[in-house]
Length: 130
Image (cartoon, rainbow, N blue to C red):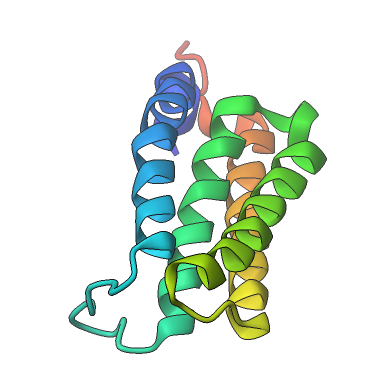
């Protein structure tokens, strides 16, 4: 829990900086006509979507803080829906299942980041020495 108290400003900055390249990768992955197949447990397309939007939501929530939770969630959901619609223009199929996986990933990413941000500092700070 040491990571929360001392490094919280750095974690928030890292979320802000890493969000933009992650966003670019997600947009590219959703709009490329022939996306690459990922190795490992990501053979299932829905898990790709879940993981991508989990990461986007987690990074955006860390960067923006607790006051904008609803806006972050709505923005990530709108992004997912918009990209699913745009997929039909690049020769791919936009699917409701992908949209649902996007939303579930965004919701869990938001929850994990929010839980980290609301963690009381007295639980993570070391007690004073006598």
